[in-house]
Length: 263
Ligand code: MG
Image 1 (cartoon, rainbow, N blue to C red):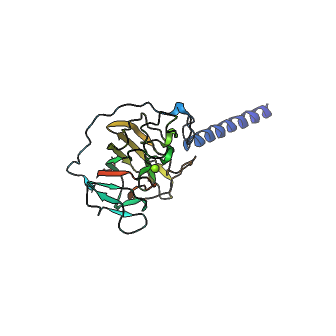
Image 2 (cartoon, helix red, strand yellow):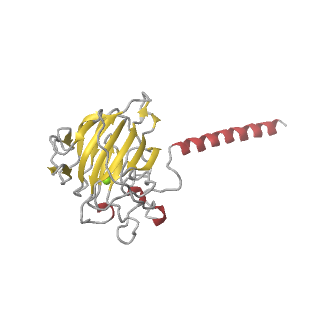
Image 3 (cartoon, rainbow, N blue to C red):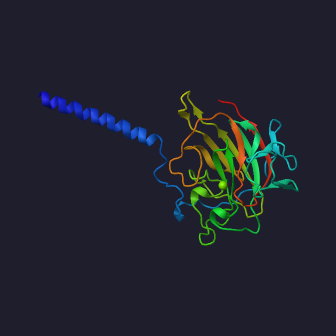
Protein backbone atom coordinates (compact mmCIF):
# COMPACT_ATOMS: atom_id res chain seq x y z
CA UNK A 1 0.00 0.00 0.00
CA UNK A 2 2.74 2.37 1.11
CA UNK A 3 4.82 1.50 -1.95
CA UNK A 4 1.87 2.24 -4.24
CA UNK A 5 1.45 5.69 -2.66
CA UNK A 6 5.15 6.45 -3.10
CA UNK A 7 5.04 5.36 -6.77
CA UNK A 8 1.95 7.56 -7.32
CA UNK A 9 3.66 10.58 -5.70
CA UNK A 10 6.77 10.09 -7.82
CA UNK A 11 4.60 9.86 -10.99
CA UNK A 12 2.81 13.12 -10.11
CA UNK A 13 6.15 14.87 -9.48
CA UNK A 14 7.56 13.65 -12.81
CA UNK A 15 4.41 14.84 -14.62
CA UNK A 16 4.68 18.33 -13.04
CA UNK A 17 8.40 18.61 -13.88
CA UNK A 18 7.74 17.39 -17.43
CA UNK A 19 4.98 19.93 -17.99
CA UNK A 20 7.19 22.70 -16.60
CA UNK A 21 10.02 21.77 -18.93
CA UNK A 22 7.67 21.57 -21.91
CA UNK A 23 6.27 25.06 -21.17
CA UNK A 24 9.66 26.68 -20.51
CA UNK A 25 11.32 25.11 -23.57
CA UNK A 26 8.41 26.27 -25.74
CA UNK A 27 8.56 29.84 -24.40
CA UNK A 28 11.79 30.86 -26.12
CA UNK A 29 11.46 29.01 -29.41
CA UNK A 30 10.43 30.03 -32.91
CA UNK A 31 7.26 28.51 -34.38
CA UNK A 32 7.90 24.90 -35.40
CA UNK A 33 6.67 25.38 -38.99
CA UNK A 34 9.65 27.45 -40.08
CA UNK A 35 13.36 26.81 -39.96
CA UNK A 36 15.89 29.55 -40.60
CA UNK A 37 16.61 30.48 -44.27
CA UNK A 38 14.55 27.61 -45.76
CA UNK A 39 14.68 27.65 -49.60
CA UNK A 40 11.36 25.76 -49.83
CA UNK A 41 9.30 27.43 -52.57
CA UNK A 42 6.04 26.74 -50.74
CA UNK A 43 7.11 29.18 -47.99
CA UNK A 44 7.13 32.18 -50.35
CA UNK A 45 4.20 34.58 -49.80
CA UNK A 46 1.69 35.44 -52.56
CA UNK A 47 2.38 38.46 -54.79
CA UNK A 48 -0.06 41.40 -54.72
CA UNK A 49 -0.07 44.85 -56.37
CA UNK A 50 0.21 47.89 -54.05
CA UNK A 51 -1.62 51.20 -54.57
CA UNK A 52 0.20 54.52 -55.33
CA UNK A 53 1.08 57.58 -53.18
CA UNK A 54 3.59 57.56 -50.30
CA UNK A 55 2.93 59.25 -46.94
CA UNK A 56 3.95 62.83 -46.08
CA UNK A 57 5.19 63.58 -42.52
CA UNK A 58 2.65 64.74 -39.92
CA UNK A 59 3.34 67.86 -37.81
CA UNK A 60 4.97 66.04 -34.87
CA UNK A 61 7.39 63.95 -36.94
CA UNK A 62 11.17 64.27 -36.60
CA UNK A 63 12.46 64.63 -40.15
CA UNK A 64 15.42 62.28 -40.54
CA UNK A 65 15.95 62.92 -44.24
CA UNK A 66 14.01 65.19 -46.58
CA UNK A 67 16.30 65.14 -49.60
CA UNK A 68 19.42 67.15 -48.72
CA UNK A 69 20.34 67.60 -45.07
CA UNK A 70 22.09 64.53 -43.58
CA UNK A 71 22.85 66.07 -40.18
CA UNK A 72 20.57 63.54 -38.44
CA UNK A 73 22.93 60.73 -39.51
CA UNK A 74 26.48 59.57 -38.93
CA UNK A 75 28.63 56.74 -40.26
CA UNK A 76 28.86 53.44 -38.35
CA UNK A 77 32.62 53.88 -38.82
CA UNK A 78 32.45 57.20 -36.95
CA UNK A 79 32.08 60.76 -38.14
CA UNK A 80 30.00 62.17 -40.93
CA UNK A 81 28.06 59.80 -43.19
CA UNK A 82 29.53 59.48 -46.67
CA UNK A 83 26.66 58.10 -48.72
CA UNK A 84 25.96 59.80 -52.04
CA UNK A 85 23.32 62.53 -51.76
CA UNK A 86 21.75 63.91 -54.94
CA UNK A 87 18.38 64.65 -56.55
CA UNK A 88 16.50 64.35 -53.26
CA UNK A 89 17.76 60.93 -52.25
CA UNK A 90 20.74 59.35 -50.53
CA UNK A 91 22.36 56.20 -51.83
CA UNK A 92 24.39 53.39 -50.29
CA UNK A 93 27.93 53.49 -51.71
CA UNK A 94 30.06 50.96 -49.82
CA UNK A 95 31.27 53.49 -47.25
CA UNK A 96 29.61 51.58 -44.40
CA UNK A 97 26.25 51.64 -42.67
CA UNK A 98 24.79 54.77 -41.13
CA UNK A 99 22.78 55.46 -37.99
CA UNK A 100 20.84 58.34 -36.50
CA UNK A 101 22.63 60.70 -34.14
CA UNK A 102 19.64 60.46 -31.82
CA UNK A 103 18.47 57.32 -30.00
CA UNK A 104 14.89 56.10 -30.20
CA UNK A 105 12.62 53.75 -28.31
CA UNK A 106 8.98 53.10 -29.24
CA UNK A 107 8.37 54.76 -32.58
CA UNK A 108 6.52 55.08 -35.85
CA UNK A 109 8.84 55.22 -38.85
CA UNK A 110 8.19 56.09 -42.47
CA UNK A 111 10.94 55.36 -44.98
CA UNK A 112 11.10 55.15 -48.78
CA UNK A 113 13.60 53.13 -50.78
CA UNK A 114 14.33 51.98 -54.30
CA UNK A 115 16.44 49.07 -55.49
CA UNK A 116 18.77 49.42 -58.50
CA UNK A 117 17.35 49.37 -62.04
CA UNK A 118 18.25 47.42 -64.04
CA UNK A 119 18.57 44.85 -61.25
CA UNK A 120 21.97 43.38 -60.57
CA UNK A 121 22.88 40.22 -58.70
CA UNK A 122 20.77 37.38 -57.37
CA UNK A 123 19.17 36.26 -54.16
CA UNK A 124 20.57 38.11 -51.13
CA UNK A 125 22.96 40.02 -53.42
CA UNK A 126 20.12 41.72 -55.31
CA UNK A 127 19.44 45.12 -53.80
CA UNK A 128 20.17 44.24 -50.20
CA UNK A 129 20.05 46.80 -47.42
CA UNK A 130 18.01 46.96 -44.22
CA UNK A 131 16.39 49.10 -41.58
CA UNK A 132 17.71 48.12 -38.16
CA UNK A 133 15.58 49.26 -35.25
CA UNK A 134 17.84 49.96 -32.29
CA UNK A 135 20.70 48.77 -34.51
CA UNK A 136 19.56 45.17 -33.88
CA UNK A 137 16.21 44.22 -35.31
CA UNK A 138 16.29 44.16 -39.11
CA UNK A 139 13.45 44.90 -41.46
CA UNK A 140 14.98 43.61 -44.68
CA UNK A 141 15.36 45.61 -47.89
CA UNK A 142 15.83 43.54 -51.04
CA UNK A 143 14.71 43.48 -54.65
CA UNK A 144 12.09 40.74 -54.30
CA UNK A 145 9.99 41.78 -57.29
CA UNK A 146 10.64 38.51 -59.11
CA UNK A 147 11.23 36.38 -56.02
CA UNK A 148 8.30 34.13 -56.85
CA UNK A 149 9.80 33.48 -60.27
CA UNK A 150 11.93 30.87 -58.66
CA UNK A 151 14.27 30.31 -61.58
CA UNK A 152 15.16 33.99 -61.98
CA UNK A 153 15.85 35.17 -58.46
CA UNK A 154 15.78 32.46 -55.84
CA UNK A 155 16.09 33.38 -52.20
CA UNK A 156 14.72 32.29 -48.86
CA UNK A 157 11.33 33.50 -47.66
CA UNK A 158 12.58 34.89 -44.34
CA UNK A 159 15.10 37.05 -46.22
CA UNK A 160 12.71 38.70 -48.72
CA UNK A 161 11.98 42.42 -48.80
CA UNK A 162 9.89 43.30 -45.73
CA UNK A 163 10.91 40.14 -43.93
CA UNK A 164 12.02 40.49 -40.34
CA UNK A 165 15.29 38.94 -41.33
CA UNK A 166 15.60 35.28 -40.40
CA UNK A 167 12.53 35.44 -38.18
CA UNK A 168 9.34 36.33 -40.07
CA UNK A 169 8.28 36.10 -43.72
CA UNK A 170 6.01 38.98 -44.84
CA UNK A 171 2.33 37.98 -45.12
CA UNK A 172 2.35 38.99 -48.80
CA UNK A 173 5.00 40.10 -51.30
CA UNK A 174 4.05 43.75 -52.01
CA UNK A 175 7.30 44.61 -53.82
CA UNK A 176 7.36 47.14 -56.64
CA UNK A 177 9.62 46.92 -59.69
CA UNK A 178 13.36 47.68 -59.38
CA UNK A 179 13.92 51.45 -59.52
CA UNK A 180 10.42 52.32 -58.29
CA UNK A 181 10.02 54.03 -54.92
CA UNK A 182 8.64 51.81 -52.18
CA UNK A 183 7.44 52.65 -48.68
CA UNK A 184 7.70 51.06 -45.29
CA UNK A 185 5.49 52.33 -42.47
CA UNK A 186 6.35 50.73 -39.19
CA UNK A 187 5.12 50.78 -35.62
CA UNK A 188 7.83 49.51 -33.28
CA UNK A 189 7.63 48.69 -29.57
CA UNK A 190 10.94 48.22 -27.75
CA UNK A 191 11.79 45.12 -25.75
CA UNK A 192 11.83 45.52 -21.99
CA UNK A 193 14.27 44.03 -19.52
CA UNK A 194 14.21 43.67 -15.75
CA UNK A 195 17.06 44.85 -13.53
CA UNK A 196 18.92 41.57 -14.07
CA UNK A 197 18.71 41.95 -17.85
CA UNK A 198 16.00 39.30 -18.30
CA UNK A 199 13.48 39.93 -21.11
CA UNK A 200 10.09 40.84 -19.69
CA UNK A 201 8.68 41.96 -23.06
CA UNK A 202 9.93 41.12 -26.52
CA UNK A 203 10.15 43.79 -29.22
CA UNK A 204 6.89 44.03 -31.21
CA UNK A 205 6.55 45.30 -34.73
CA UNK A 206 3.83 46.08 -37.26
CA UNK A 207 4.92 46.78 -40.84
CA UNK A 208 3.12 48.16 -43.89
CA UNK A 209 4.93 47.66 -47.20
CA UNK A 210 3.60 50.03 -49.87
CA UNK A 211 0.56 50.57 -47.63
CA UNK A 212 -0.14 46.89 -47.06
CA UNK A 213 0.17 45.14 -43.71
CA UNK A 214 2.89 42.53 -43.98
CA UNK A 215 3.51 42.02 -40.23
CA UNK A 216 0.75 42.50 -37.71
CA UNK A 217 2.17 43.10 -34.25
CA UNK A 218 4.64 40.21 -34.23
CA UNK A 219 7.21 39.54 -31.50
CA UNK A 220 10.89 39.54 -32.42
CA UNK A 221 12.77 36.54 -31.04
CA UNK A 222 15.93 38.58 -30.47
CA UNK A 223 18.58 40.39 -32.52
CA UNK A 224 18.66 39.70 -36.27
CA UNK A 225 21.55 37.89 -37.91
CA UNK A 226 22.56 35.59 -40.75
CA UNK A 227 21.72 31.93 -40.06
CA UNK A 228 20.86 32.66 -36.46
CA UNK A 229 18.61 29.78 -35.39
CA UNK A 230 17.98 30.92 -31.86
CA UNK A 231 17.97 34.73 -31.79
CA UNK A 232 18.74 36.22 -28.38
CA UNK A 233 18.28 39.50 -26.63
CA UNK A 234 21.01 41.51 -25.01
CA UNK A 235 19.61 44.13 -22.63
CA UNK A 236 19.65 47.73 -23.87
CA UNK A 237 17.91 51.06 -23.58
CA UNK A 238 17.08 53.52 -26.38
CA UNK A 239 19.43 53.20 -29.38
CA UNK A 240 19.89 54.79 -32.83
CA UNK A 241 18.11 53.60 -35.94
CA UNK A 242 20.52 52.12 -38.53
CA UNK A 243 20.52 51.63 -42.28
CA UNK A 244 22.63 48.82 -43.69
CA UNK A 245 25.35 49.07 -46.31
CA UNK A 246 25.29 45.59 -47.83
CA UNK A 247 27.26 46.77 -50.87
CA UNK A 248 24.25 47.37 -53.14
CA UNK A 249 23.32 50.94 -54.26
CA UNK A 250 19.90 51.25 -52.58
CA UNK A 251 18.36 54.72 -52.62
CA UNK A 252 16.52 56.28 -49.65
CA UNK A 253 14.28 59.34 -49.34
CA UNK A 254 11.51 60.86 -47.21
CA UNK A 255 12.47 59.38 -43.83
CA UNK A 256 10.58 60.55 -40.76
CA UNK A 257 9.96 59.19 -37.29
CA UNK A 258 7.51 59.81 -34.47
CA UNK A 259 8.41 58.82 -30.93
CA UNK A 260 5.63 56.84 -29.27
CA UNK A 261 4.81 56.58 -25.55
CA UNK A 262 4.34 53.45 -23.50
CA UNK A 263 0.66 52.57 -23.32
MG1 MG B 1 19.77 43.36 -45.28
